[in-house]
Length: 111
Length: 116
Image (tube, rainbow over all chains, first blue to last red; front, side, top):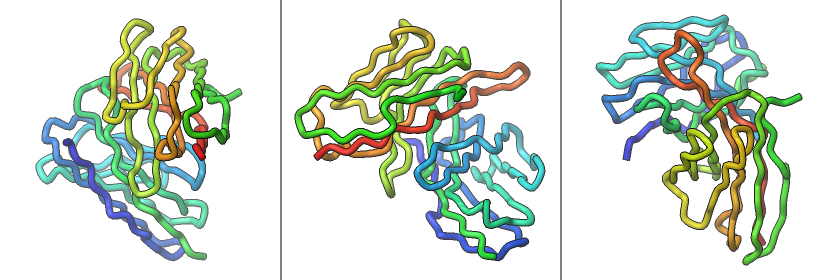
């Protein structure tokens, strides 16, 4: 079983702070990595993807990938209460196959 | 209009009943998926289809069947519903954008199914 592990949280950060969400995966053949945001009762929304080692920035979001350590993270700068949601890490091993999801980390941004 | 639609959005049914959940997409994607989501268990893949003639079981296909009626339509059936099939069901589609090396998935709004 290919595992994608996330701390379930909740992770609580004050408004304006940096939220750091972490994900580890077990399959060294993993090729593509995705972060989805899911509000309660809603569908997952793709917010970031990363394929290569290093950092990728998009607005307030930065995805970080370290394939040697089998570790991917999502940083949210200047966190807002509207960022409060569950963040799902997803990994694609074989291109085109369905994603393997972690169970998600709940983030709470307090005013 | 939404790119991926699911019907019904909410459904309550009784044990033993047959029920069909429908998914339609206007994104033009070939690949479609059905997931279920349970508290504490995350998203789990039920079935996936790479085109109309290619349907594959996911990790939890027992008790479910699917039909790919067209590129744009992918239906999930519960032949005889049981209470532990109570969950939030999501349809997803995927595509590999030009210049990218992987497929990105996009989810429908979900169907909340309760089996009593």
